[in-house]
Image 1 (spheres, rainbow, N blue to C red):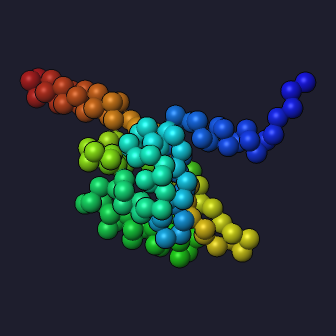
Image 2 (image 1 turned 180 degrees about the vertical axis):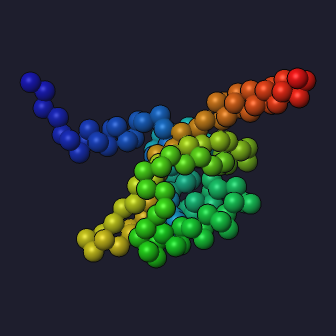
Length: 144
């Protein structure tokens, strides 16, 4: 029978996951950044941790993001719940990528927000294929 430490097991799963798993505190400062996040966004953990989420949010989307984030931290409520979100993000080299992610609101003992964890996946390749298919469909529909 194998003995395993559930805390170590959880750590290994989060650390090694191919998807980005990150946590930002109530001020939007990155406090956790796994190897998947390093791979997807191009920032090593020691460069990402302690930085604002602006690190991965395209500039033109920041105002809207922060408006929603501040409201969520003030109220403890998010309109997204268990929904899968799809938004553009930004890599270390400045290139854009398409992401899908879910969020987990973390609360303190008094049910006040501590911050938000996210599990993110790079779906850029699929997004590009779908765009080509939509363009091709529109082209074919215009011919008939």
